[in-house]
Length: 372
Image (cartoon, rainbow, N blue to C red):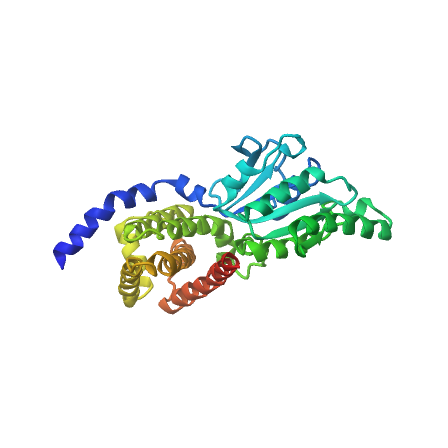
């Protein structure tokens, strides 16, 4: 048995290290919202409203993706999702095929952005027809923008209905829509919360990124800015755990890097002893359960057919959730360590399970979206 273990370890060591060191591998699998709309329709404003980043402007924060599109990854430092903006719609020779090919594997939904007062949408409709023919994207959301520019309510209704009909006539089925104005009310916007909820139906992680909860204590306030970092590490570990055996090496590596990063944020020196103390704080049975579950997930993925589909999907979800939960518990532990205070095993276990369940709902939602 020991010889088999060392043989497997040698086989996975090199690819595991390579996978853990490649942020580009995570970036290539980012879930994507493809924004389709004319210039000035409000695509940058939509990204601003969802991300809370006021610096999302034309050419600011975007990177080229194809000859006619560009991407905006959010958060920029450790991205968890991608917005794709198609720029060439107004060109007579625009062909959506290249953008469709670029998005086929990662796009969660196409977001059609139409300014309510603009009835001429032929370029958008042509592109949408090509997307439908490809069958590469199943989910569509229509966002009617600038609704308060039409002061007369009946004219507003007519304009929205006109564009809704244009889209549904091409998509060949009813299309979910949201009416918004990104700068028309006293608080600066109308319909943005409804937009977030609609997008979260297609991409549940948005619900985590856009959470604006009150912090009950100082520890939660310290954790809040680190939440996106932990989600990034969780996505990275989940992504590498899709490959049989590789996750046995990459998941612990990525989690170790996350803990080292978090310790630095709290001013705690992180070494083998600090790791051992943290594991001990989680309880004697935690490490045994962790290693046994990790090993079982790898063996499950080796089962023909089942392992490559259900087994891999389950491994991705569990690695994502467990990494996030470890990160959340670590923040609690490190906060009290920085204050010279102890934290009970029961409290850490409770927080670990609470965090695991919180993101499990998100991963379950993503799986449900992919199946439809």
